[in-house]
Image (cartoon, rainbow, N blue to C red; front, side, top):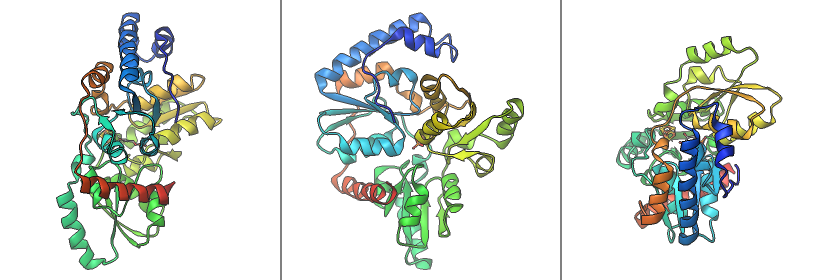
Length: 336
Ligand code: 13P
Ligand code: SF4
């Protein structure tokens, strides 16, 4: 996690990012970003707003963020907000919902409502309720653990939530030997390697991670001697089997900083490699170049408009909010 800067240095931003994409971060682009960043800084002050951003956001979004982190850190941070009236969430819809769960009195804004998630789309509360009812006939002690990448009404039906940073910990700590794990089949299969409990998996996946193949990882390894492979647990089982470490996005950041190794293949959404490039310039990062189209819906213009027009406000019915809060609090208790 980092506390991000609230000042801009367009030249520094350009210098750091030039090798990534010289076209996109030309001097003209940076000058344009500087104007947008100045507008956002002013609006944040006027609205008494803070900006929370996920690790997969665009580098220029990091420049306006008060806090950047993985899903677990963002949930914890959202719960601790004390002095802001508005929270602008630079991430995807389910994350903004979590911020709203912890901040019912504050205005929580998502700059673009198209910022969804293929995992969250793969399970509805109705389908989950039906499946759980069916399974409880066979496993009366069944507990539902939901990965935070799901809607608030799915969370509300869960006994506990988890993130990629604490999934095995939550599953091992919950008082049942039979767990219905939703919605990520890849994370479920990874958790199964860390527990003796029975994991019954949903069949959702993240379209970003699921498309990465072991052949691609093998090709990168063959091309770059000494390459350390760090994979996200949303990756396929055959990709995870090749990894030197399996970590959440922020744990990848810490690992890359602390490891004596020099060269890493970052097997997750590309935005994380951008953050690594900015913060660990002395090491070499090779990326599995896949972008999450949902995360990339958030732009500086969108953030500025969101603050200007106070849009798009996340609203949740009270019973969904309270149910989701119970499952999220349970995660914080079991998985801290
Ligand atoms: P983490 O940042 O929690 O590892 O999650 C990755 C992700 O896919 C979020 O949508
Ligand atoms: Fe959802 Fe995957 Fe995008 Fe994360 S990277 S928001 S899990 S689609």
